[in-house]
Image (cartoon, rainbow, N blue to C red; front, side, top):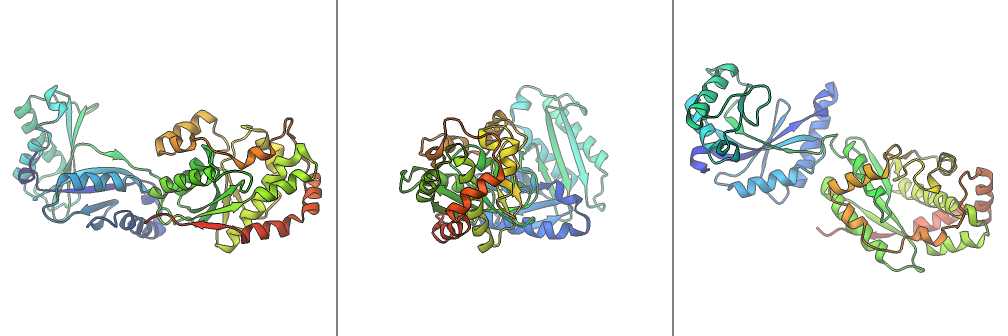
Length: 398
């Protein structure tokens, strides 16, 4: 396909949930445009909002390869449902028809005589043809030129035409976006980030609900190597594609674990550790103005995630704890981790700090009073404050 026949490439972004926000819609749209601008900071793009569609205009003469790269990058920005690589042409029915013929000419669907449909939308009512008339005009030309059968109910190829204020957009396909809400539109949270499969998926799910998240990783140092830190860093790097400006902090937790083990409560050690992690995370969240903690807990998945033990952990802090995976099974979490690109990183070997306190017969229904007794021995509130003081920041590469 040539740019001469098809005009200039651009990218159209279709919104979903945002358009239902009523009087608050503009706030969400402003946040989304800011996120798009940041995600595309390495490209020259003119962002224009039009009736539930965001159009990304590229400099004149931009090649289709750049437009495709822009489409791929912006498809990772939450708040967008569909991303279309489109073509801008003049608002002239004959020009639109020629462009449509050129657009589909070399497609596999034409080669195999696929069933097709034309779907037009006329946002500018000054255009001389109604949507149905434009459908028939373009569809007739495509049928005559390529012998394609029309199927308005279940087409294999759909040619979409959108008549806008200053131009007409044409496209045939699109890639799915992330959906959800723009990151930053729902506040800020802190993710307890392990090196496993669950917590990165939990982080992604909350970003998709508009929460900007920071990340806190507990390392077993000095009793483990730095491998888990490298994994956490790599996971945050991948998740940063969905929000940008991510922050990772690491807590050297090994000596605190040693103190818990010395308490002699082997069956309760894991839950006591989890409560101390939550207390430390709550203190970090307070200092960095996060309103909630986020974990990758899934009900009944491991001993620390029985209902009784979740309740025992919940009581450790006043801050809300969000558990977006609570009702998912492992197969569902793995499938989502694969889709968002974190699974391969999570499966790399490392020394997880939690294994240092793994008991042979862990408690399945911890009593809060027993845990508080351990915490009084440890002076857990002061220890959590000291751990929050000891965090190390890991800056992501620009």
